[in-house]
Image: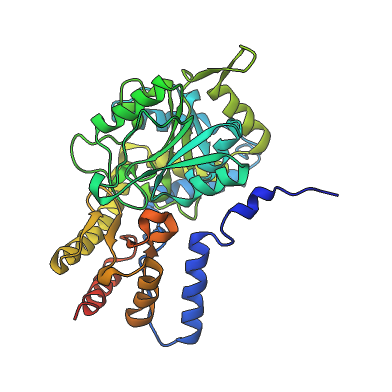
Length: 399
């Protein structure tokens, strides 16, 4: 008899955003005349930039000619894209080697798949509230997970505790869901903790493009000592609107080398390369051509214009919270606004109230952990007109 992975019994039956979609779809089916405004899932609404579209069209034409047709590509990504990402890091003060960069179909995939690198005996430390993928993927593998509290008291930025011993640490900055951002001193404390405890930090920087305040780090590799303990995941989903186009990248420094139980050594970079060549066939050539255009200086200017639109929406939401006296984080260096549920409500109850009374969809904080039970997340990824209307509706809840 085939034995199944019974760790799946330990995860929730429905992924957070699947449950949200079900509730919204049910409401829409029952109320077809109601206009629902979605500020929940972190999907973008602006189209791809013109430079990216031109590159995609050109790559499609290449695929139609025998002399420029591309079949299987390198699983790690084409050199033209890896070098483009390398140059982008260099412009932000971080020097990498191109073969430390691995192109993927997104940060969600890689943050989940990277668990293949670690024994099930590792203890995993995650913040609470937290992006559910970190927890679910490790639960599926049967690892021990411990939590560090992110609360209003610490600005939703938990710091290392020497009394807690962890082998693998997940950090996300700017944070999903809270929008909070670690400064350099805070990240240095985490890097020092990881190096001291021979641990590995899995650093999700999917929202680094939203950092606007001077001095805040956009990469953990801006911190001294990070290359011996940290892996960084990033994505073009929010940077350039690739949520449906699918392209991201993971940086695995060659300096992360660990001892095996029998005294030999393993390089995390070589392990990830071996994993990808076995389990991944690479991102399509056409997509990589479009992605490479993003990392040019012209492409970054175009992407910045898109990001500025979402920043304008975030400010509109933040201003509304200020007007109503609602406590929140995020909205400045993040597309997310994380606020305390009004009326002392549980977040799923507030979700239902928003949907039924004003037809605005957000994300209940309970889906991100126990510290989110009474919090709620809104995103700035809709268009300005819808965001403005949603905030006018939101105000009516307080009348």
